[in-house]
Image 1 (tube, rainbow, N blue to C red):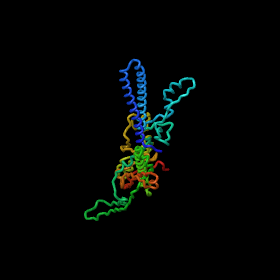
Image 2 (image 1 turned 45 degrees about the horizontal axis):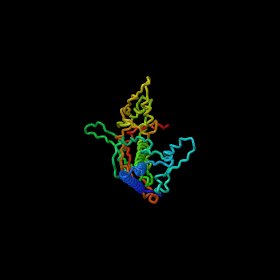
Image 3 (image 1 turned 90 degrees about the horizontal axis):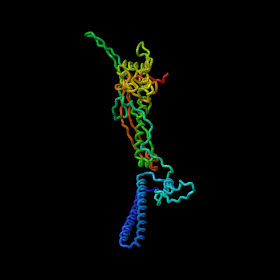
Image 4 (image 1 turned 90 degrees about the vertical axis):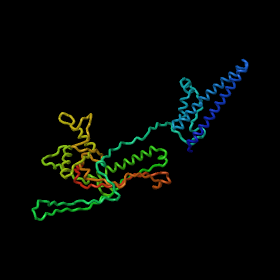
Length: 399
């Protein structure tokens, strides 16, 4: 049978009031005995003095009991750990006095559990060992999510983005003599429709635990939002474009060509990135960033010259994450051995249809009858890669 903490408080307060009233009564009786003693003969005084000493001793015992009761009351009402019966037994004065002898002893103590006395918590089981509760939750580490920060963002109220794309350009511009027919250039356009896609996930939890543990509710909220952003990071890079996935940067990027620089063969990853920067520039776009896996960035930082001095930076002070003048973004969504160099600010655009939304419902499945709640996290967005040639991708896993 469950118990209400308000009932526990009332029981404690009633017991404490009774003990305090009894102490006050004994104190008044003691005062009357002392006053009576002043009017008696020496023979009568001996008997009264003995009763006074007994009353004073009873008051001292009662005061000690009151102090102990107040400690128990404060501990239980604050949610603290009340001593078990075994802890009370071992900590008792009688046990400490007799347990040190070598002779067998019998110890009889009046021990009671404050949470089960007086039928306060009938049916409530107690744990033999009560662990310490640490504050907060021990969460696993989270990845840095940086890809979105590279790409310009806008908003849309539609379920798709319609883009007009130049599909062909024949430039016939040339010097023309006076009166001559001007050359005719050709330009053609096509239409591209980029659908808005949804990223979502959900948790199912007990309504009671969420009501009783606000910290747990906040923890679920934080992990739910992080999980959504983690999926978005992977989609922005690797989405295949097959519904309901986004069409990510890597599947649309131009393949890296290590022959871009005539007469030069790249020998290292650092060389490859510089040549890829040139390849983007030859497409007439200025590169604005590099995306690398953490392992590859570590290998670059560990490069040494012939005297074993680090080429990149001092190991004690470090350096800004830049390579060939470009900011380096580290992402676990990029496979080891691969890299992306691109003009992110010109070649792509994120369109947010619906920002991150968190909803809770008791009407999902059997939630209402089971006192459960479903917490749903979702967002809707589209990724438009308007200029695929502005991105150069080296697939480290390609044969």
